[in-house]
Image 1 (cartoon, rainbow, N blue to C red):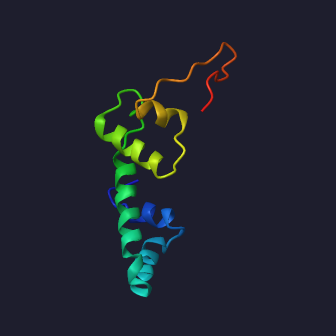
Image 2 (image 1 turned 180 degrees about the vertical axis):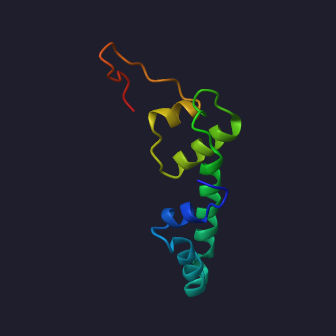
Length: 102
């Protein structure tokens, strides 16, 4: 993904394909009250774009705060996201199955 986050924001709002970014402008023009949703989607996609795939190895306060916030909003954190958010790593048995339940 590039520095332009409008494509990812459009996907967050259910628009895909070549004209997905333009769909955001159409959405706001047709229903100005949705401008807040579009702005939030752009901000979240920018934050996702900035988060490193290596965040779980060296969690930083910014990534932790972001992950904990989206968890409060109802996002179920994956095992790797949980580690990056500061939760302890799950215990794994010799067979590779998780022994702790989420």
